[in-house]
Length: 76
Image 1: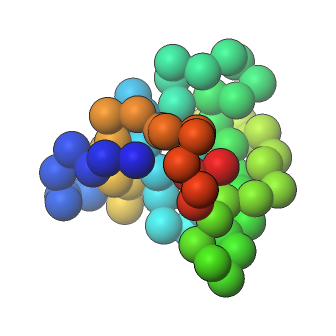
Image 2: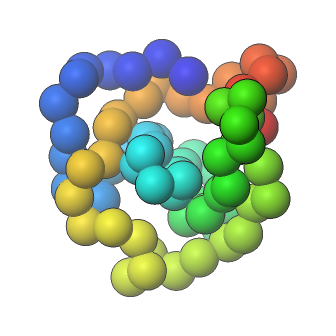
């Protein structure tokens, strides 16, 4: 996961990004995986994926990324 910038954004402005509260937006993913909530394990890995609707996402505090590298430990 490579951050585009250190500034935070609104959820509506994110194409691919994450929120430190365990949420991800990936508009390049299948519809069921577009907006998701995850548990963050003590080792920093993201586990226990749950699809959520856009309106349940935090409005602010999003970090934009180029993409999620699902092969790298900690990104899944």
